[in-house]
Structure formats: structure tokens, C-alpha cells
Image (cartoon, rainbow, N blue to C red):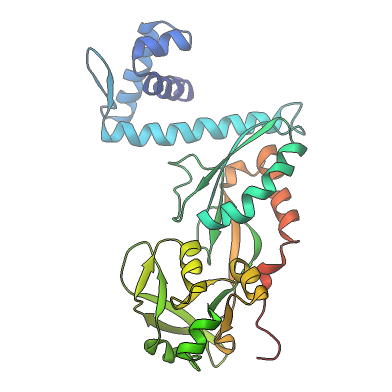
Length: 307
């Protein structure tokens, strides 16, 4: 059995919804399609498909094989493209994931120039505030905030992300300025989280970054953009990326607080699977993003020198 060919047939059968439809699209005979899938089931020692008169249904093992096989077949195409004669001409579609706010305000404006440079490329930008499963969700590149766990993924550092605490001048005038992170317990804090409840804000302590303060805010949202808008209206103290607040700080709509306790910046990476390292389109997008990111100053914004 040609295992790669059998997996391709299996994926086609699932995508088309029936063995006969897979046979027509390949093209191949219905007998050949059925034989290849049966051979896969025998090889793995498990049932992959539940066949009915109208449709196919994946078993749990079948779903695992489908997701992995689809990723493997995609990687094979990447290798073929990298070794082809026109490997210096990137083509195809790139699937990229990014945190929502960063994707809208930073990544999306950079894509027009990238597409002009590479007319044979297309981009799918997925905006999600969670860590995606790059294999199961067929993501080629992901922008990841924070220190990376040990993994087999390849990472290119883009910038350092600095989190800052700020509030509106009206709030500060009414409630005062917190002198230390501990004073936040006596203030109205605006909490960003995937689920309502308390959160932890990290601060520097004697030059270290290990001090965490538990925050129980009166207002919770799962959108940093909405929280920043509420902060500008005087709802309370918010913790946001420095690049997001730069314009509001410059215009005086927000005031930067607790600058002496700001922790070290968090790294921002672009990650992808090692198997895609040779892919022309992955190299093109990675190099472009690293090049353009160098000009985005707010990502390295430091506390004011006089504070």
C-alpha cells in the first residue's frame, strides 16, 4: 500500500462526503478508493469511517487521522514547492493567526504592501485571542505573545511587548494616583480576561518581575479595545499594551501610572512548524513581517525618563 496515496484518498473521501464522490474527483474507481481506505483501517487496526447509505461519518480515530493526514499532505506540497524550479516565486495561500486587537490595528495594515510585492500569494488572517493548534487548524504562522514553552516550533522574534497601567486624567483627579501596586486594591480596576472574575497583574519588585497582584475589578471585559475606551471615560485603571495606548497618552486622554513598577517587556514571536522552514511563501511572509516590525516604535515604549 502506498500510504501517502491512501491518506490522500481518505482525506478526499471525507472532504467530498462519499467514496463515489472521491472516486470521481480523483479520478479513480470506486473499488480502488474503497480498497485504499480498507487498507488504511487494516494498517492502523481501527475503524476510520462509518459508512451509511447517504454519507460518511468519521470515528474518533478517523478524525485524528483526518486532521494529521491533512497536515502531512500540506507539508508534502510545501516541500514540492520548495524543490520546484520556480521556488523563488512564492505562491499559494498563507493562513496566519494573530491576537484580535493586534491583528486589526497592526497586522492588517501591513498586508496590502505584502500582497503587492507577491501577486501570486493570498493571506487568510485569523483573529483569535487564544493559542491555536497549528496542526489541527491548519495554521501556517501564528503570532504568539509571551515566553514560549519548549516545543518543536520555529520562532522568529518580532518585538518586545510592554504592558502598562493607565487611567484618565479625570479618574486620577477624583481618586488619586496609586503609589504602589498594592494601592490598586483601593481603586476601580478594569479587568481583561476570557471569563469574568479576578485577574493577576505582574509588576517589578526590586528589579525583578515576579510580583503578582490579584485584581478584582468592578468592570470586566474580554476586549482590550473596549476596556481602553472605558478607561478614557474615567471608569477606572486599565492595563494595556503600550503600543495600544500610545496615541491616547500623547493626546492626554490617558495618564501612565506606576511606571517605576513596570515589569520587563514580554517577547512577541512569529512561530511556525519546522517542516515549513523551506517553504518560499513562509519565508516571504516571515521576512516581510520582521522587516516592517522594526519600524513600529510603540512596541518598545519605555517609561517616561522623569518618573
